[in-house]
Image 1 (cartoon, rainbow, N blue to C red):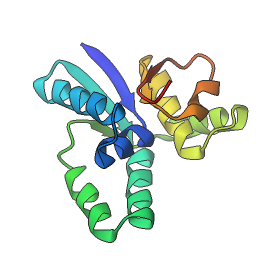
Image 2 (image 1 turned 120 degrees about the vertical axis):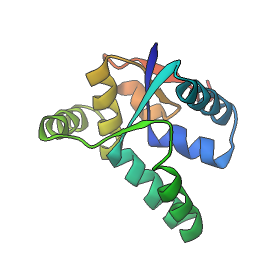
Image 3 (image 1 turned 60 degrees about the vertical axis):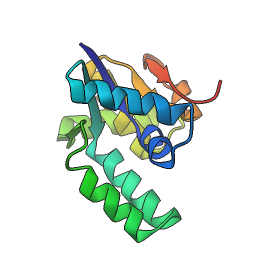
Length: 135
């Protein structure tokens, strides 16, 4: 069974319907619902999607995400202290956003690709990317 971690960028592209990322995320979600793939996302990234939608779109869209995240076919992981330290170490070593460090740490924890199109994440060594952004 394929395992993947989603970052905020991937989820926001899916919500916005921007291809090619939206179609790829939709396919992964369908596979997860069918039980043929395992998807994870950090709770930090779930919160990042919420604040981004609220700040840049509307309260209604942010609240819709909040409600739908409860039935999202993705395991939402709340980081434990050791995972917070792992993310902080990644943030300290690479020029990426703090929330991105949690997505990277989660992908490294599960030794699986991180689904993203965020160019910042290309700088993280030892991180396998499932690139869904523009080339």
